[in-house]
Length: 348
Image (tube, rainbow, N blue to C red; front, side, top):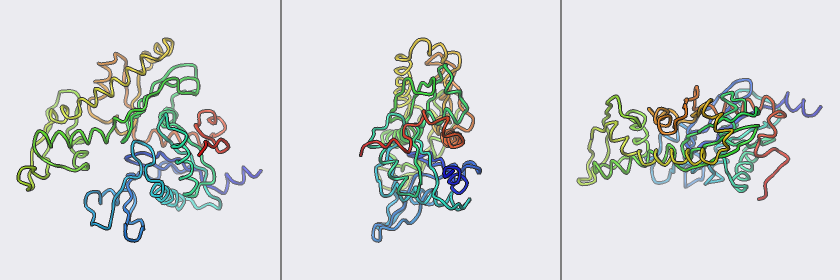
């Protein structure tokens, strides 16, 4: 009786808590927020100046008393108070779209292989931000549910979630993760590779945002169409502003070693996967989700190296958030795939 009353008078919210972007799903409305995971703080007053896209615009451009921070590093909370403030802002923004009497139920996606301490930190941050009940799910599992893979069937599926801070490689069967690996090679690492490459090869210093723009504009991991882009930064010899022309070959050279490590990690997971599941994977293929899935030529390169079909999911950026929405629709059915349900708190 009380459970049904709560459902009528409270919202259900799904959160994909990412290193680069945080997406919020509101039941009955779909994905209502897609904001960068950045918070701008006034260090004099301790007040939050901006959250999300507005705060990201401030990265590298703030005066001394304003600090733009990313409270999540490598998919886990690095600054608890700021994460709590960010979640409170996002939950509050979603709640304004559909005002209800009680606090919301929240499902949060976290990288696979998180420790109890990291899971507890996410749980506590969501509770402090105003959630009535908190459920935690691993991101590759949530992504698989979001792209409608039959996760409870006795067949193997493999999902590679390439995010901002981490890449999750997971083999899923019978409602559980059979083999998985979480590596710190993802969007941020590739941006850093580009910054270092331009510093070494062109003696040009650029920021993280510029590196990301170049990666999106001319990044391609397989040779083919020639692309180039103008990049502006500081000349390390003269200290003055300078513009250089960067090609897709430069970016391929810059991110090549990291992409190689990513492929090695996928091979490691496949090498330890039971043979019966491997035959399923060869038939069904690998599915890429997350922002990194959009890197030009990555699916083709993986297919050539692994000899398994590779597909990019439809709308890969929102797969995890969509999965949290499906879980919210039937929490009872998906209860056994959750890392943490409300009544199973990990130790502090």
